[in-house]
Length: 258
Image (cartoon, rainbow, N blue to C red; front, side):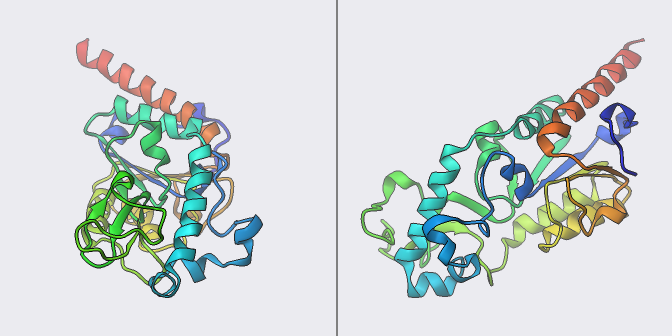
């Protein structure tokens, strides 16, 4: 069902017992962060599929790191959108009943205030040794020489993100699917729903009885399965959706105390 106004959405207290959110690149695009396929300037000569691979890092680690550092710079100049902040407010409204899963690697949710979330594809601002797999913060590495050397084993350090041809962290994926199966309300926000296994999460939630809401200006492969669709940007929908949730919670508390 396509809705024009949040006020027409009929949320009930039982919908808010276990809210799970999946975000994709759309919510970051609203902050002015281009997807890695929309590079411009110098990096437009490269395809992301040719840089974000283990093979590229093995053959040209300096080029790969220069590309990622340029992306870090773009991300650092952006700010979280009202959509990011609305999700933080939802988490505060529903402690223990709200989980955020993201396909994004930009760390924008953490900058908005999220301290706990599942990052399916890693984080561009964290680093991992390609040899010993230890993780290192930027302040422990020398970026004057690329790739940085691992302080422990001296192996090459890489961005801690999932590259093309690599498998996702199985523990993170299993946690995400468990959350989807147990969701009472599942929000699919700004995701193209074409990258698996993340694309299956909304459908798993729906198949297990969750109310599935899609927030996306564009139709996606999950649109036909969504119970509710808002064809607007997340920054426009999520603040209003938070206020709707807050009213449901407040009314439920009043009923409990009558």
